[in-house]
Image 1 (cartoon, rainbow, N blue to C red):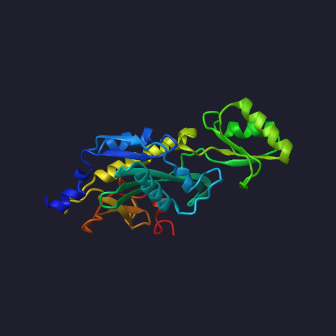
Image 2 (cartoon, rainbow, N blue to C red):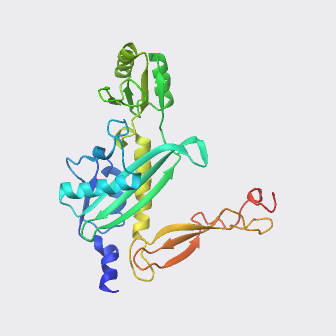
Image 3 (cartoon, rainbow, N blue to C red):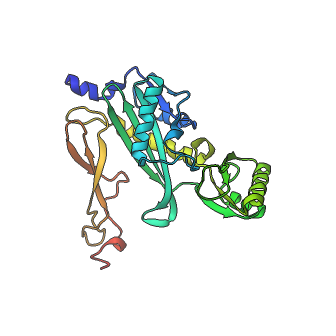
Length: 292
């Protein structure tokens, strides 16, 4: 293997310590996942790093960057703040699932930044497993009904006077005690006529999100560990898909995914492989020839 290929293989990580740029306990799931495949000596949370400067779910700090850019900025900030040269960061976005807008989804991003050569490795994972929502309430009964729907107190809540934060508005985060929730709602309703409740989407306050971050890290680890068969570079990742999965009845190509495309960032090599689930045929109900 050439010296440059060795630099781009998993050997680039050998003997190094991974810093996790987080304020919210994400090192608990990200570190073990990456340590499973990378030859690093350990993974630690970076102390005193301020990742909220790039945006806060509760609205006091707007996220001005898109999720990937924000994630890269977090990782680079972590490297600058700690002096570490291998840093991973996470960013999440929540909203309607595009194919089915009535369903909420969690879109998670992970970035691994290697300050030695400026290389940025990224991964995206979308999950329908999420506890995410918000609602205006006008009394304690409405608040407790909302809390019950969103798995309180296992999942913490945020309370503030209105849906969109304004300078000077109080924001109460990390609510897990029913007595505290009732008292805060009563105070806010008395002062403002209503109260906005929402799920606290910080990872340490939302176990469902923490699990999804862990899943994302596991998938990222698998992608990082795949090395290009031509040049040996790590992160021989899925870069696209091909449609045309044949109908099981007539053999006609459907719009469903038939194969996955893997690409190398270092040498540009591309190859195709079967679907991860092993399917080689599509149900006729999804065939435009059988069901025009």
